[in-house]
Length: 154
Image 1 (cartoon, rainbow, N blue to C red):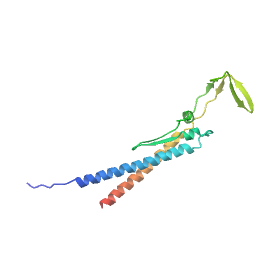
Image 2 (tube, rainbow, N blue to C red):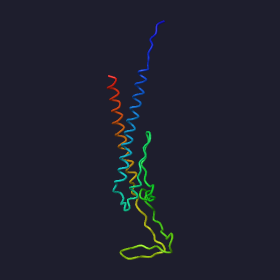
Image 3 (tube, rainbow, N blue to C red):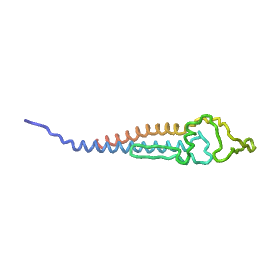
Image 4 (cartoon, rainbow, N blue to C red):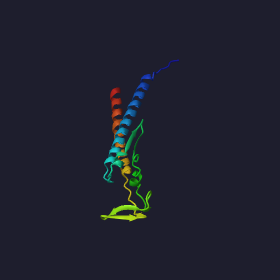
């Protein structure tokens, strides 16, 4: 009987190297996407951040092939900006009456009706930006990894 024997060790090593290059490429695309999404959220014109607390609350977390941009730690009003609010009644918490300035006059009231606020989905916009960067980046970085792999095998 005759036979042919093949040693796939070199092929396996090449596949493992390609796998590592593809993971690194995907991670680079992810890092770019998270950073751009956070930048979009921090620089958006969708809201006026008087104190700066909301923009400062925007954080980025990047792990192994996963990332997140979040807003709200230290700025509990982030979700109200993102999602808006329904009309609601405001009553005093610590005092008997509310005190505020309206048209240059000091006004006292036991309660007021807030008209609600329109949603300003700055995180939704940031997610869209991040997804576009991720899609482009993964295509670019993975394509580059494959091209380098093919060039090394030539």
